Structures are given as C-alpha cells and as structure tokens.
Length: 508
Image (cartoon, rainbow, N blue to C red):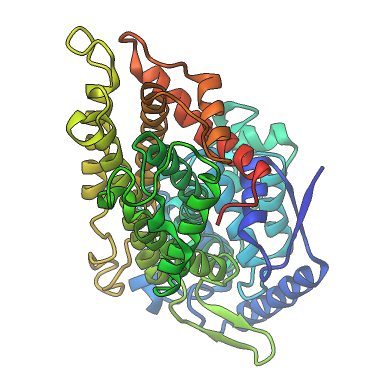
C-alpha cells in the first residue's frame, strides 16, 4: 500500500490528492510524534497547576473568563463537541471529508496544539481504515475556524454522530467498532485542538485548486478544437506577441495552443481568410492565462495553509508560552477562494462565447446550430442555452463571500471570514465550468466534422479521437444531455488531459 509520511510541515498538494482521492495511507513522522508528546506534557502541567489558559482551564469564546477546574476538563471538552455540532445541509463528499481529516492531523502533527498522541493516532487510523464521519456542508463562519463541521468529525471519534464505512451509513459508534478502532475520551485542550482550525475550507479549496489547474489545461485543448472548427488565425499566439507582455499564464497558454495545433491543416494565417479573429479566439492566451496566474496565486496560499497550525491557543515548547492568537481566522483563504471562483468563472465565460460562435451561422459560416437539417432538427441550439445558464449562475456565485461578516459569540468574535462559503462556491463554479467546457468539446468536434475534417493538430487530433470514441457525430436530433455527460466524464476522469499530455510535452 502506498503511504505518505506527514510531519506538519511538508505535505504537498499532490500528496494530499493521492491520500484523499486515491486512498494512499498516512503515517506520522517520528520527529512529529515526539513534538506532540512534549506539547502534551506541557498541557498536563498547566492543568495540574490550574494555570489560567484559554480553552484549557477556561470556557470558550465569550465564556473565556469562566474558570474550569481540573476535575471538569473532560466534561468541558466533550460538551464543546456536542454543543458545537450544529452543521446543516447535505453531507460533504467523501474526498472532502478525507481531506478535512488529513489536514487536521497534519496541523496537529506540528506539535503546537497539546493533543495526546493517542488521540491524533485515532484520527489517522480512521482515515486509513476509511471511517468517514458525516459532515454537513453548512454552518461555518470561517472563524474561529470551521467549528461546526469539525465538531461533526470529532463526534465519531467519541462514539457519537454518524459515519460511512464500507459504503454503508451507520452510527459513529458502530463504524468505529466495525473498523476495530477504539473510541476515545477527550481530555483537556483536545476538543478545542480538533475543531479550532481552517481545515474544512482548506480541504474544499485545495481539491478545487488542483482540479482548476487541470481544467485550465483542458480549456486550452477545447479552445484549440474550436480554433480549428472556425479556421482560426494562429498568428495571435506567436511567442513574440507574448514576450512583450510576459505574464506567465498568458505565455503558457499561447505555447499550449501552438503545441496543440502544430501541423494542423484547419487553422489559417492572418490575411488568408480574415485579418484577425474575435476576442474569444484571439485573446485566449490573455484570458485563460490570467486565470492560470490566479490559480498559481491560490496554490501558493493553499501550500502554506495545509502545513500551518491554525488553532488557538498555540503552545510553544522552547519558551513554555501559551499564546492566544488568531490563526484560526480564515481570511487568507477566504480571499484566495473568492479569487479562485472568479478565475474559474472566466474560463466558462469564454468557453460559452466560443460555443456561440460555433452554433451561430452569422459568425461561423457553418450550418445553423451545427445540424444539416435545420428546422426539422434543433441541433446544438439548446446546448448553448444550457452553457449560457451555467455561465450566468457562475456570475451570481462569483460574488465574494469574504466581503461579508457577521458578529458572533456575543460580539467577542466580531469579524469572521466566511471562507468556507467561499470555498464551497468556488467548487460549485468549478463543476459548472467543467460542464461548459464539456459542451465546447462536444460542439467543436461536431463543427470540425461539418467543416470537412482535415488533418488536425498534433494535440487536437488526439483530443478529437478521444471524444469520438465516446460520442459520435450528431446526424439527427438525439437526447443531448447523455452526450454532454460523456464529454464531462472524459474531462473529470483526466482521460483527455492524460492522453494528450502523454503524446506531447506536458501542457503548461
């Protein structure tokens, strides 16, 4: 079984994906275990001395001025989890729940949280044995961290709540028993250490960031097929043009287009058929590239956050300081995930405009709505409608969540990030955008056939053949959503991207 070693400092996004999506197991580094144990010794010392430390010997939030005796510390932690499990809505996807568990374990492995090693090992064992708590998607303000959804994760650890195990929904207690994992009794600081952090928003956002980077390369492939279907002018992608405005994403997209279209007999040079194309073709490098640069910015923030300590208070071993701070505040990720959603929506915006050029005979010189029997058949008319609907929905979803805040805990927590809402919105925009790009693949291949397919480019030929392996040319009207779903599955499974990149140098 493939394993990933975690130490709280070096988890990569690729390793994160391998664990949450492909089932790699997790093991904790020896050095991390030593830090966790030393941190715990300090917590035990504070409890024994009844030192006033937030969340250890005091209540939470507005109750931070209420002292808790050492005899009450276990009740305090259990009560915290029970009372904070206020999530509502649909359960988060399994891979997101796995991401939450992994990121919380990785943050605790840094050794700043004061949790017992045995408790942390229980969380890792649940991840490895695929005991997945049911975590409702809504209820987090994004500070003090993702309290409500993380509490649902911890419920299962203490034998409460619900979990999925071996594809079956059952009580948390039953799932733990079936997996052979001992239920824990939380003690001082542990409940707070497990729920006070940004791991829900970050897990959702990390998955979305990874998928967005992949989708941006697929968008270049779909755009290249549309360029061929419309006999697009390739001079606009010349390296000289982009070197004088050297945004990295723009240069990468231009290189991708030329690589994909190499040796194509269906593209043109300026002046052969027209001097220049409309912006939705000519400006692909600038628009796709801007989104790619945004994704790289978000990736940088994700890489920091997945290896950060985000709970409160934090325990510093060298100085024996316990400092109450605000690392649980999700603002760095809230802004990033709002940006992610905006950048994704622009990929869909441009793709829909290219679909419009394919189906509109006044813009394409192709048969109206890509059907030879217009009138009797509607062809791709409503494919464009559906794409337009998704694009408009994305515009609503792209309104930033991070500009909103609402006070909580009797105004003790008077500014919150809404970062988890930002992450969830970005993921929904991703799903809509993937569908629009699937529709473009479907329409572009149809248009290529109607144009009279000639030799396609080095990369687009591969992409066209993959689409045609699953979706045939539409001669007469058929049930279209099934064909769209097939094209989306080609994207979602990474089959299209991997096949193209295996035959070319990796797209940028």
